[in-house]
Length: 309
Image (cartoon, rainbow, N blue to C red):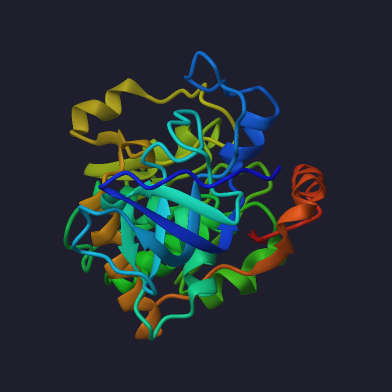
């Protein structure tokens, strides 16, 4: 759809898109499973993140200038809040506070591949603690986009990582991301873990996996849930709460500008130092987004799909 570009408000910035990532949220909204919160949702532009170059800034913007490479995500962009048109567009307009800088030393496409999954993993691990150097962390769904980013981030922060995957064919990939140990479980539950054997869990799967994850926590351990690909109906032994285990979670729906900039600063630093690797990605023309959605839903396109206008 072609649309004219409205004048910028004083506090806004407009970026020319380099790449916009496709996320699970986009598919669910398009399918009508997750309704938008606006009473008048159409016209609707999907996409909750975009990497691009600043094209123009509003009269009140002093911290940003045209030509800088930036990333923006959530904060009302597309998604269920849909306060603004989303990232599936040649130009994206946001509040300038919703931007984070990508340094010239970092490949914008590498940051686009990390994108929202990396920020989600960063926030979920932050709920576990500031210093992870003495932690053994279990990461579920470690072959998925968020899980893969979490493996690298946890290792960059000094943790020992046990990765749970459902397909043996993903073992080498997850080890290459930095996992110390890989558990393959077709049913998804970490059955081979001893009870009370990990300090923390970064949980992306939910469903029946959740039960084993709670059981695997040591007394005082923390489970941080950032997704539930297998469903939100979970069970666990309530007696584990007597052991002072903490069950918490994180969603980037709560992301604000300062939090985004802290996360992106960490991610770009680790990228530059070679401590983390971006997930495998493919660059697709924006015009082919319908086909990309269909093929992702069929499982034909692993890794991250980035749209280029």
